[in-house]
Amino acid sequence: MFENLSDRLGGVFDRLTKQGALSEDDVAAAMREVRVALLEADVSLPVARQFVKTVTSKATGAAVTKSVTPGQQVVKIVHDELIKTLQGEGEPDALRIDSPPAPILMVGLQGSGKTTTTAKLAKRLKDREKKRVLLASLDTNRPAAMEQLAILGTQIGVDTLPIVPGENAVQIAKRAKQQATLGGYDVYMLDTAGRLHIDEVLMDEVQAVRDVANPRETLLVVDGLTGQDAVNVATEFNEKVGISGVVLTRMDGDGRGGAALSMRAVTGKPIRFVGLGEKMDAIEVFDAHRIAGRILGMGDIVALVEKAQEVLEVEQAERMMKRFQKGLFNMNDLKSQLEQMMKMGGMQSIMSMMPGMGKMAKQAEAAGFDDKAIRQQIALINSMTKKERANPDMLQASRKKRIAAGAGMEVSELNKLLKMQKQMADTMKKIGKMGKGGMLKQAMR
Ligand code: GDP
Image (cartoon, rainbow, N blue to C red; front, side, top):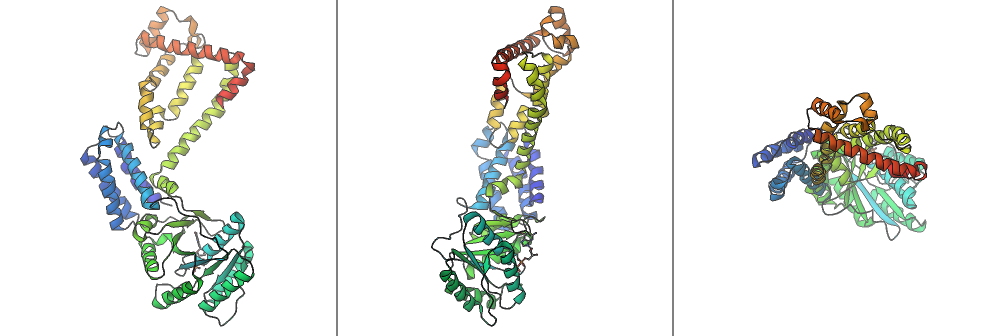
């Protein structure tokens, strides 16, 4: 999900991150693209407008102009603002299912995934919270829908209210309440009838059911693929029936994701769960941080860095540990350490990609740990012969001069590198002496 929005915004920020400094014009240009990206993702116009306005005012503020990586600052502001827009104030609440039997009213249009979601949530309550749940279908117009719920109930091991032909929705709701009370259930869920479109009859019926059931939660199920329509449906249901939250289904599909962004802002109601497939386990609690991360594609970057670290740990650590245990650490070892750092995209890029790490990248640079220094160090090592790399102690004045010249650098730089290698070799020797590498093994984990 969200691939399109992520791609669009990704492109904008790629350009921003390559800027040395960020002017007001840059922000304005970037925000125009953000606005288009949001609209293309089917975010409603007022929401997109408000979003861009907020981000612009924050991005052109003092903190950004002072910053070294303004592009990243903007990404951070957009990221934070996405979370705010997605989740409102604070995290979504857990389902209110205290004082048993707690009624949960499930509402939504036909085909939105309402019955499936009802069963998914029932399974969650049963498996994770050890609740006894009773399911009841109120869709008297469609016997097939009632049967569908009964079948799903059997499948997940949750009881369903026996079907009594001829009852209307209100009668079924009353019977469900009675049965849930007598049967000692913790929760009973009412799967109301859906229509293809919102109409008076439907709303009247849902209202009547609501009045007899007095639900602790009224969850609206909407199809996440329908974008703006989903938001309109939510607005209608909220005005006529009053909802306590939204479940966005089909978020596993290639929808444009804008519905999630608009939903909270337009309806003021939280998204509580997202449906991610047809299977009974394919439902997750809505997580604004994760979705904001996914929209910006930051999750991918974090995963990439983790992967690089894995490679470092497995391939390099094993091989090098054997040498270190013997107290060996020559220029070849140093080189492969430095190369590993570069392989991971260099210190700068790794840190600057992470939200909020721009400052640390700056500090690393001040400590002589920047990409340029690493590249120069590698160049110096490359300029050595095989023998010299294996035995750096043999480097005398004339060899030093040749090596430094070969790398286009000063001998003083080479001396720094030699000192670094010596220090590391000494440390390795010390650690190697301590309990046959046991300490080192620990240190490298
Ligand atoms: P209802 O008419 O609102 O009760 O809709 P149903 O629960 O019968 O669902 C309609 C179809 O959508 C079924 O084939 C479901 O398996 C499917 N469906 C429901 N939720 C999801 C979801 O999150 N992802 C996907 N891919 N399909 C879903």
